[in-house]
Length: 545
Ligand SMILES: C[C@H](O)[C@@H](O)[C@@H](O)C(=O)CO
Image (cartoon, helix red, strand yellow):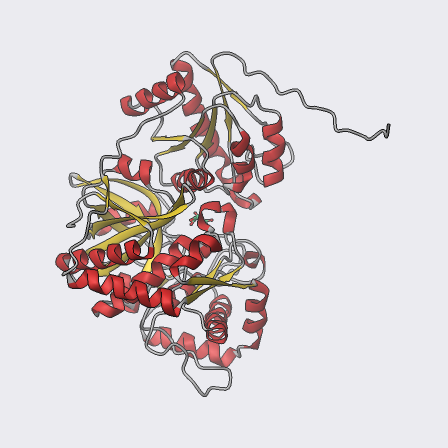
């Protein structure tokens, strides 16, 4: 008989009784992990104290790295190694005070057999809630059973009761009574006819989304397989960020400066400084505008209907942030871009929808929103935001929707009400300016396209954007990232915990309509379009259908 070298069988550890094991997933960027570590330690102490008060013990599943000084799992490999040492049947909690890359822990969580809980602190300072929402959405797409919980410090009655429920049963049931399935639609409604006609057109004529490097920052939920995407009539053009760099190198300084002059003329405020390491410089913006021009030219080359640049891996070490380009692309009014030889203006008078962080759920949504809003004669500017945080103001819960860098200027009421600040060095070593502002008051449709049970779904809802006093706006910006664009959103008929429990992404899509009745009509058209394409449509909160 032949003798082969068989791998030694690993003996799985047995879980200690009444013990919860914790892990913490982090960023890939050392600067972010180091800076956020004290906040993470604080949350872990609060959470452990809550568990211990309920009579259980907490064992941290991995230590603090002596070299880096932080205790985050900072790569997929590190995560796999940590999970090898954990008892596979133990109750396991992923504790998150920061923005994290879900794939760091997804491999381990996919094969973990014990109950899984993801928790975050209800705080604005670092995007822990955003990290939680990405991980729970990724687990949902992966079909891994899990629960989630959030609290300021895990001493409030609600969180303590929910934690107790999880310790006892291995599950937390949240109130999801705000979600209902789309009812049969009125065939005679013009919005239904519009939605269905646009769906037919999309399937028959097809559209292409350009994906500059798929899979940003471990966001597994943000990747939609071709098998799910193609039946909608949407196809991916897989592009490399290297090609974007090469194209940027072909854009002249003079062309970028012309775009800069256009923006200065439109009264966009740039907060310039001189220290490249921490402040915004003209050279950074010039590079960003070269990216804008290059992205439009490549989109034209490939006949793209929408485009996404992932930036935060790879490009972040090569050029300043993609955000300024992204905000410009999503706006109808933007610096004109001509073909390389100057003969043609590209995508004249139109927004070219951009899906930040190559989130393909956003790509589908932005493309469809753009078509419906254009057909209805509304401003088609649409953007994602991070579901970042929120607090009550004046008796209602006002969300801080805040994406990490840019919105279309029309959301702020125009370029003259928008500004550009240097991206925080912790995340963006080479800087670059944002396209920021405070989103104008008005009526919005919000939505999220996501993958669950191997199918595409969409959640749709209505909201209003509030105007808050300047001091409150500033307080919210200071409590989060003051460089980033903020929207004071109130969701109709959906409370804080309902959104957190249900929302299957760190991102939420928003688009304005001229007034409440118009927003209701746009939502109806969107629901009809998505239903016609075969998505499972869910209505969230108070929706007039
Ligand atoms: C800068 C950070 O990495 C952000 O990109 C992160 O918080 C997100 O926006 C995630 O959607």
